[in-house]
Image 1: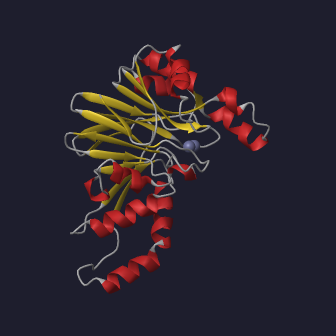
Image 2 (image 1 turned 180 degrees about the vertical axis):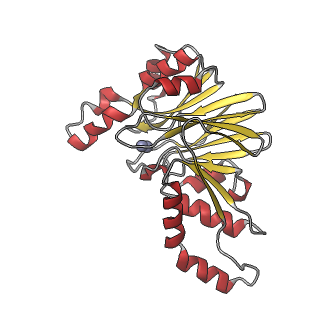
Image 3 (image 1 turned 30 degrees about the horizontal axis):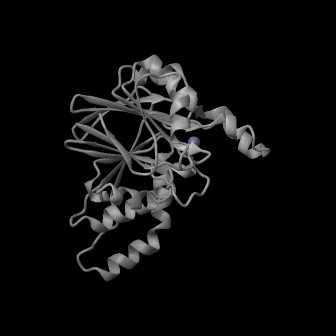
Length: 274
Ligand SMILES: [Zn+2]
Ligand SMILES: [Zn+2]
């Protein structure tokens, strides 16, 4: 069994209804958190999961909207664990730099808590693994394969294929379609892709907003990737602009023109089994 939960379906644009980008993949033995956007722990708790229950955190890239609440994951994983336990964090090169800087920013808090709690004698333990395309690692009971994505000029960026319990899901992160992403998705039961609506973005006369068009998959792009790869279920998330109530069928319809499989999208905490 494998369950995919869209924890936060928002984007950098603040939205009172949507947390920042993050996804939970749960298998019979493990729980993987993919990206840690705004409000991730509120949504993780909403899915019934607390940080000590995580097998690992997988980071697709180092854009801030995917990392804003990494500090909260680290702190809460540390404080809620009764015994010192490392938090596994997997990400592209420079992930260690981000984690070290986060730990440095937490130094006052760490010292307060160690001084206050007699049973707390050390700070957060974090085990960082920086990965490159082609890497394959075992984490808990899952096999994780790493591939490059195309989110240029942001580099490096990666996608993850998680295999466990005879199920497979690909977390595509941000980016436009690419041969490498197609290959990673081939035959997967699920594929989670961040998407924009280019038709709506083009109507907004703002140069900085228009810039996002060249490095994100549209709803149609994601659907075509899913179709080419023979994916079973397509999950759409990270909606730009935010998916307004009642628009779900419109977004789903645009994907369905290119992909005949199951399409999952909706509010935060939308979940589906694979
Ligand atoms: Zn990004
Ligand atoms: Zn993003």
